[in-house]
Length: 358
Ligand SMILES: *Cc1c(COP(=O)(O)O)cnc(C)c1O
Image (cartoon, rainbow, N blue to C red; front, side, top):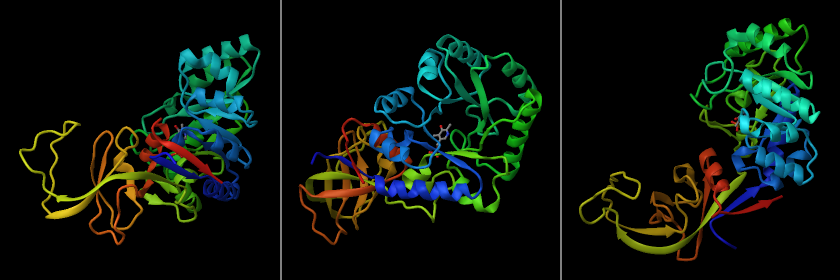
């Protein structure tokens, strides 16, 4: 086995996504499974394509291309608003995209015409998180612009995102304003919109039973919820989902008793910070062959009891193992759970081996 190793339990994720699908179904809400948090491995995409999710959603057109080339047959959604430079690929490869710019919509409309291909878009509204989205009071002007587009570019509905850029949480009130944005566009277009996509994991899973969503919300795009069983913006784990979806394993390359207080004058560390270490006397410490090139260390939590993270550099993670029951030695493997940032970084790092178990 080659370390560091990210061990992903696809069976646990499958259990999570199925619970989410059936919970949301009670409210008439469909699920798009978002794959970007784990860098969209095909093993995950294949598993998801066998569930009742209504689309696989990723932020990179490159990943949508890989999934299609693999022969996965489900609708694909691009969830990062498209670059002008990728519109040809977006129309060719994706079924849905999220859009927040009239110029981009016009280019997409022309590209649909020239490829003789249909493509669906969700018009994004910014309800306060200040990432992507039209301003909700622009509904009339937006509808006027939409009327000029090719019928091949289908206006499938509207979407909103929370919790990503500014940490803004959705509320019943902001959801109602979002719905009325969609209804204004409907009134202008003189027809109903199919999809009201009310957000991502942020607060959705924990507040769905307490009436967060008005009736018209009929879709959510979920990543973190099934990938980690948590909702980081709300700072909680979701009680009806599992959190043991993955762990990161690293190998000890040195184990030695050393002082806890560094010896000599303290300058800056490799990252420009002046570190401070409390004097706790001599303690047993280990060096793991994993570092900042592999994972965002701040997102790791030791799973072996008694292990404490001291600090890390590019390729080394120092741990205090004085309080471990087990006497660890060089060559032993220590395990860590991951938060969203650690999942994102380790799944992206080419230095981390990935195993997908089912
Ligand atoms: C990342 C993302 C999601 C999924 O977010 P999670 O918090 O992982 O559920 C949904 N929609 C958009 C637009 C995103 O960028």
